[in-house]
Image (tube, each protein chain N blue to C red):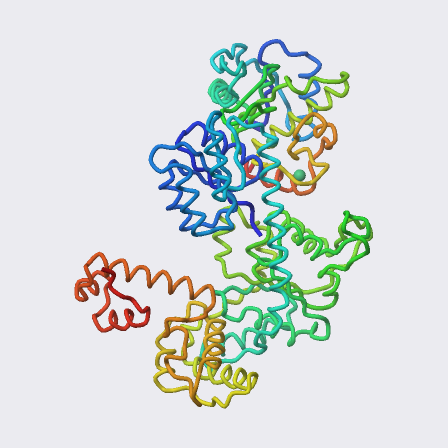
Length: 178
Length: 447
Ligand SMILES: [Zn+2]
Ligand SMILES: [Zn+2]
C-alpha cells in the first residue's frame, strides 16, 4: 500500500531511545509502520531573538515542504528547542489539523526520571499526530487526546484513545485508505 | 448541542491565525474577522458563544466593538486581547462589560482555563433554562388534524409505517407537528402499551445528555448520589422520540449508533448491560443530508435512523386546513380562559389564509391563543391577530422575521425620503401593500 508510513523526523541531536520509543508508540496507536527521516537540522529560520524560542508554525511549513516528495502519510518532527506561536507564550507542540505535519518539543517534558520522560513524550507524540488525523482535544479524562496543561496532566492521562476518538480516527483512516 | 462557536477579531493576520489554529485543535468552531466592522457583519448571521477581541485595531477599535455588541446582546462573553502597556484600556473594557482580558502573548493554560470557565457558566445557564422550559412544554396541543390532501397522505403513511416497528426519521419545518406524528406512529404500533418517551436533543445541554439518556450508577461522578434510570431505560418496550436529532454532539452520535447496533447500553459508571428494547423515531427540521456532507452528522447514524422517512407538510402547503385548526384552537383557548368567543371574523380568516406561517401550526396556535386573550367581542377580528397588529406578543420566530421586515421597510423608506412610489418600486410591492405595512408596523417619518 502506498503512503502508509509515518515519518519521525528528529531535528538536531535527539536521544536515540526517545526516537525509538516514539516510533513504537505511533505504530501501536495508528497501525502504520514508521521511518526515521532527517528532514533538516537547522531551524534558525524559525528562531525569534526577543523570545529566544522557535516559531512552530514556520517549522511545520518547511517540514511539509521538505517531505512533499517522500512517500509518507504523516510526519512528526521532534525537537529539544522551546516552541511558540505568536499569540501564546509557548506550546508543547503544534499540528496541522487534518494535515500532514506536526511537531513535538521535548523542552518542557524532560523533568523526572527516564521512564517517566519516555512515557510522557510518547503520549504527546501520539497526541500531536492525532491532530493530523483530524482529532481535536477530547474531554474524556483518560484519553491521550485530552489537552494537557503541564507535565502533571500528561502523566495523569492514559496513552490510549477513548472510544469516541477511536471511532473518529477510524472514520479518518477509512477516508484516507479507501 | 453542537460545539462552541468562537469569533476572533484581530487585524493582525499572524495573531488571528495562530489563535485560530490553537482553538480549532482544542475542538471549537472558530471564525475570524480582520476588523471590527467585519465582526459586526458576522454577528448578524451567527450567534457566537465567545468573542476574542483585540483592543488596538485599525479602524474601529476593540472598545467600540465591545460597546456596540454589548448594547445588542448583553449576555455574550467578550474577552479583550491587549498588548503589554495598555492595561488601563483593558480595565476600562472590563468596566464596559468585557468578561476578561488577556495580555498577549498569553499562557496557553490561562486561555484554556478562561474558556473553560466561560463555557461552564454558559452550560449552567442553559441547564437552568432547560429545566424551566421542560415544564412549559407539557401543555401543548395533543392531536393531529387535517383534511387536506398532504395530511391524508401523512395519515396513510403513518398507518403503514406504524406496525413495521422500523426506525423512522421525520423531517419538516418547526411547528409542523413532527412530535404528533411520532406519537401517532407509536399509538398505532405494537408498542402502544409501552411508554412514549420524548427527548428534545436541542434543548438538553450537552453535558447533561449522556446521563439523561443512559442514566447513571451511584458514584459515577460527584453529583451521582443514587442510581438513576436514563430515558433509554424508562422507554423499555416503548417508543423513543428523539426530537431535533440534528443538534446532538458527535460524541452522542457515536454512543447512539452503538446502542442501535449492539441493542444494549450501560448506565454512566455502570458495568451491567441493559437491553435496548425500544423503537426509535427521530425528527429534525434540518437538511440532515447536508449535515452529513458537512461532516457534522454521521452518515452511518443517518442510515440507521432513516430506515423509513416521513416528510411533514408545511402549513402553507395545506392552507385548506387553517379554518379547521383555527376553530379548534379557538374553542380550546376560549374554554380555557372562560371567554364567550365562538367565531372568527371573515376578514380575519382571509388574512390568515393569505399569511405564509413560517412557524407553521405552532405559530397559528400561538396566534389564536393571543387573539383569544386580547379579543373584546364574541368574534376574533383582524386586529386581534398578532400577525396584523403592531404590539404583538409573539413567538421569537415570527418576532424576528417581523422585526427584519419592519427594519428593512423603514430603511428603504428613509433612503427614498418617504416617497411611497419609489419605495414600493424598490421593495417590489404595490403601493397599497406598502401603506398597509406602514400602518401595520406603525412606521413614522423621522425629521
Ligand atoms: Zn493538542
Ligand atoms: Zn478521546
